[in-house]
Length: 277
Image (cartoon, rainbow, N blue to C red; front, side, top):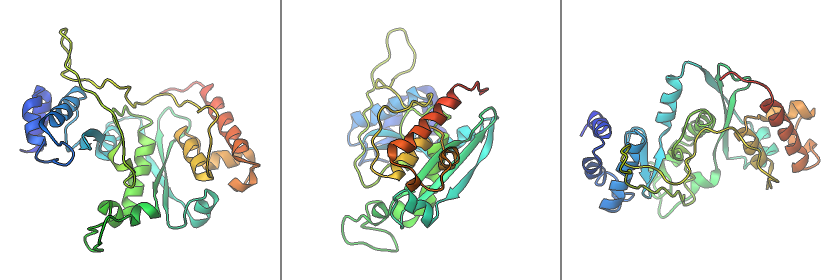
């Protein structure tokens, strides 16, 4: 079956045929007929094409970075993005391991005063985690062969996903952001449409979408890297924080709370400014 046929089944809302096609392709993630049917209904409900737009993992849907990139390419207000690869000094200041790969992506849009910021991280532990005897050529035996073979590419994808998902409605987590060294738990429930008609299935749990960033209450950080990522999720870059505080490195702050006060100040200030989106 070609991708065009998959697209046609989604358009026709034919969950039965779609699930029949998907189950043998993902036997470890769609372990039975009902799991395949639920996933097919979820895809149809959100008008997403399996394989191209989303992939099942442990029975739950994950959006692909290709879907996110396509939203940006079709957005007239999208002005492009740029990357910054963290140096050893940058990583040290944020308590990252020297062998971690950390990349910052800034995505610019017309009408936004500041770019949307995302950090992409591939840790040393993630790259080297194994589950048995390993083969360096094929990466067999590593918990994530793709991450082991292409860690830089994955870090770039993750940073871009982290930035762009703030702009576009994401009905599920992004596949490339999956922390391969942990078990991801994402609950999605599919139910039949009401008698009034509408889409075949719907996600009952609250969906992860593009919402106005909210400041967390009394956040607790274990290192400067966690604080920087939390700030980036709110659209505040490390450069913004240092510039406002008049410092050159994280250690210049008295403590995490002192630095977070600056983040809160910047977020509050920007929220009060009228924006044309």
